[in-house]
Image (cartoon, rainbow, N blue to C red; front, side):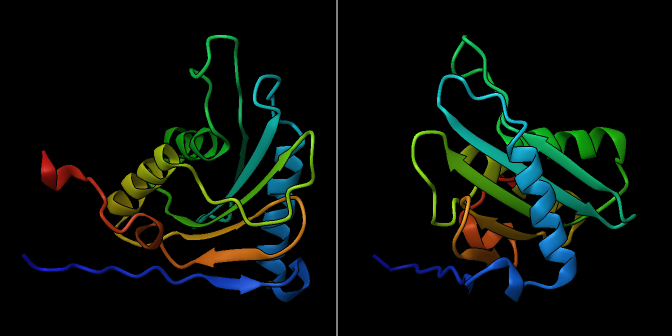
Length: 160
């Protein structure tokens, strides 16, 4: 038997003021998108904003329906739109903001597992990392330099 270890490294910012202006603006777009979420069942709203290498910013919010869980997360809403409308553009950065209707969310909320797998597909496709910034409604902001940092044992096309 052998032991395999993989570490994740996150960078923590105390507030939006510590971020660069470009990243702070991207996070503000994610916050705006979060406010447009349709989440009557989970009562948990998420917004995502992507910065593409062509300077386009794409936003998405989670969209639920009564046929739970066939809705779609904010991250996948944004990333699939970017892929369909700008298939040759690279995603440079992703900002995510999440919050619950019934209590204030003050800790960083990372992408769910399904979203991590979807983001991984785009990192592999574009052969470059995507910086991911995530937060709650308020409080600290976490930064990961790559999705592979959040999903160290990724399933990809090499397994097929």
